[in-house]
Amino acid sequence: MRTAHTDLITQARAGDGDAFRQLTEPYRRELHVHCYRMLGSFQDAEDALQDTFLSAWQAIARFQERASIRTWLYRIATNRCLDTLRSASRRPAEPWDLTEIEPPSPSRLGEVAWLEPFPDALLDGAVGSPPGPAARYEQTEAISLAFVAALQVLPTRQLAVLILRDVLGYPAKEVAAMLDTTVESVTSALKRARAGLHRRLAPDADHEPPPAPGSPTEQALVTRFTKAYASGDIDGLLALLTDDAVVSMPPIPLEYHGRKDVTRFYTTVLRPGWTYDFVPTRANGQPALGTYVHTPTGLRHGIGLVVLTLSGDRISAITRFDAGVLASFGLPSALAK
Image (cartoon, rainbow, N blue to C red; front, top):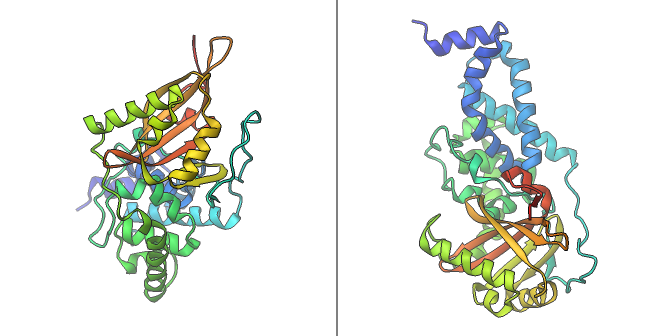
């Protein structure tokens, strides 16, 4: 007995674009998130997603139904992302962008200059099918900035295997088929990837969980942060941070770790005479703020997006991205008078 799904596959194989879209569009958002986890860059993920759907359209006539449409699309997307990673054409690190301020020496230089935030608005509906039983991470944890950044330093094959196995929960046999390798190779890569990821994320293990999104605790903490930042209240800002707080600002590779170095940084860059406005949004399941500075003309110029990583009633990380990411969040480059 033929089903509507089977009919759509037959029609798509025959070149019916509408049938192809009905088959594949339900997976667009989750594939976008998958590409983002693989690449760490919102823009690169968008490009990989478009390449995935183009490749799928070109290959649909040869689709043999040996796997589901969803698994077939994940195979294509994963391999498009691996191609991107192997090309090494990632966004390079950029110099400090405020010529009138000389930043203090950093604690260290960041390794993932291409990291970009992912808008929460695009996460709605991104989990089309629940993760398989092999998944080890909650979907919210697996989209956090810390998790995505940690993924980026893994070797490419390990990165793909860990996401497919531990985030999406695909069985080792299916992952081996997706990557044209053996189950033994997948098992070995996964073991090494888990160890590498654990080394990166272990320092966060002692942190308290963040407050619930939109909760009074979260809102109060964000409000206190914006007030302290806007007024240049360094003591008030530092009082909100954990002792091991981290400040980073990709694609600028400077990173400041711990209260002492973070104090040096904000003492240098926060200027009481500057006036800021903040537009709240969310990125990677975390509170975020479009940041605007007043100019002599009265126009409020966008200078970037700040993403806050929360731990209990404190802030454990502040990640500042440049103004180029504002458009992805539907935020303007400037606010009117």
